[in-house]
Length: 68
Image (cartoon, rainbow, N blue to C red; front, side, top):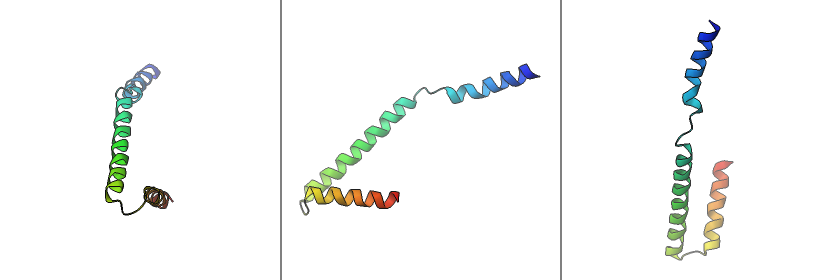
């Protein structure tokens, strides 16, 4: 019985420990974040209403409000 339970445990835990593709997913997330930040900066610079420092401080302020 102990051998069967151990075999079952190994079969169930093997897919969980398999991390193939996890690093690729992390790189895709970083790339998406970079594109988002570059898009925000390009929109902020294109309007030229406020200084870039003001816009960045507003973005940081809003993020800290969301986070808590």
